Image (cartoon, rainbow, N blue to C red; front, top):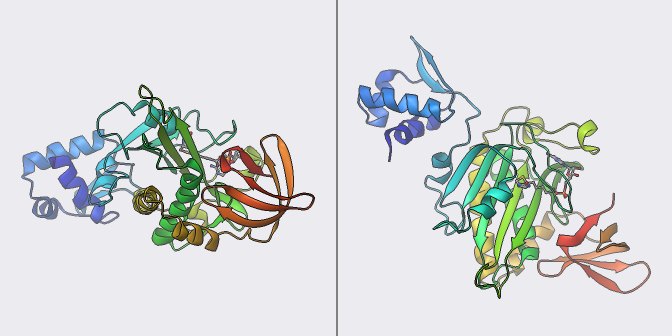
Length: 325
Ligand code: BT5
């Protein structure tokens, strides 16, 4: 491990608290010269380290996104063994797809402090101020077609809700197909995109799961045209993004392994337990048509099953469907 990462771990584990130079030397195992270099390197990486002559040094919270802090001891099978953090990108989904030809890119996580062209589904925008929230994408190679995108959309929403609950104690509601909400206000959104094909040797199937979570700031309703919320508003204090990212990645890793092994019952049950839509009336736009009826179920492979007011039950796929408010 580099000296900078050794020091970062010590500072992060005591974040918010001051440590004297003596304590830092003892805890990090560095000598004074390496400590000074490590401090410079961390500051160049964007970390804000406050220093006072009497109290010593401390890492200022919330902490800048940092690949080492995300990867360390994550202990996942597939997701997040490698992470990259950017200051600014167009969309983390684009960067994830662009990284697909790199070695060991399966499970790669791309994060950014700001997206200049963050996107939602069906041509919509994802808006998020710099440095406040989670904007991340997970790249998966799926040459054998073991990961249906319908199931991944459900799994990503569930993983985000579970990760948020583990860290913050707040349990968001899941709204099909891809929203997390608290008291009707949107907290997070999921965008699963697929490129390549199963038949294409030149261009094998790759999937990117994009996850946007409002952690410390929610865009105002005047910008979005609908209510949004963030975790900090729910809790009344700022939230450390890195902890939420790690918890979401761990849960996502579990659900992806289940999907890969064709085990969808647990995913289905856990998702439905967080969704208040069962037996509710819904109006849904899907593939250029509008459907009205009662929600019978959400299938991880076939989408939402709606008992129409007029006509037979229909299966509506997540990729092309939207709830009409
Ligand atoms: C989504 O689309 O909810 C998927 C959002 C995925 C965003 C992530 S961020 C990382 C990755 N990189 C990307 O470029 N995207 C992914 P949809 O269901 O279409 O919802 C979009 C709608 O949500 C917009 O039309 C707005 O009304 C609203 N919206 C936009 N930004 C929001 C925010 N920060 N919080 C709440 N609502 C928002």
